[in-house]
Amino acid sequence: MMLFRLAIAQRDETNIMVQGDSVNKEIIMKLFLIIISSIFILGCGSSTYFDNAPGEGKIAFFNYNYEKVWAAAISAVDELQLELKTQDRDQGKIIALSTSPESAGDNVEIIISKVGEVSATVEVIFILENKRRTETVDWSDIIIKKIRKILQ
Image (tube, rainbow, N blue to C red; front, side, top):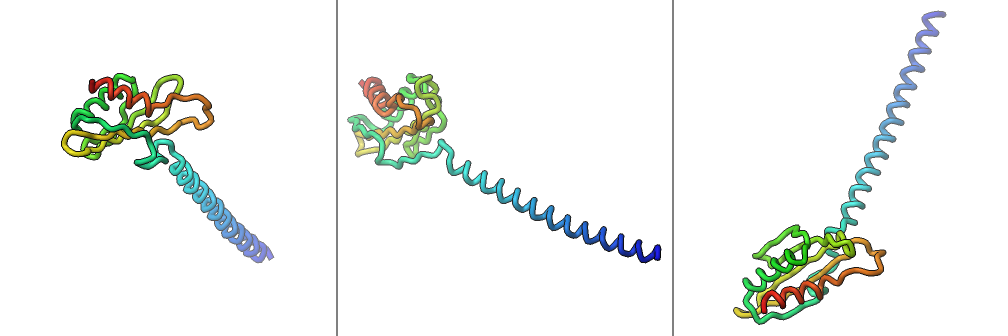
């Protein structure tokens, strides 16, 4: 009789372990899916990506060659105390971040395109970091005016 009770107890213990393993696997799988989904959603919502595409910002034409306009744009970013994040002269792209209290965190993309040998265009696209903010700095106009002033 004692042997029979041990056999039943051992079988019940094995059964509980098997059920516990499947429950643990389910919980781990659900947590894994939640974590992966969260990473995907947060990655897609990042403000460092520009929602606007080239052609959607403010564009200005300059009667100066590409190199002079590029140098003026880099100087403008520096003089306006924007934080330079990336610059790629070959692609004509500059990305900067505003640190001013009125627009802290706003991303600014400056796209410079060569138009012939002696002229270039500058397009400025900016993204509000806080879309709920009602007042902000219009970096497009400010940067274009600063580049014009530097080139004069």
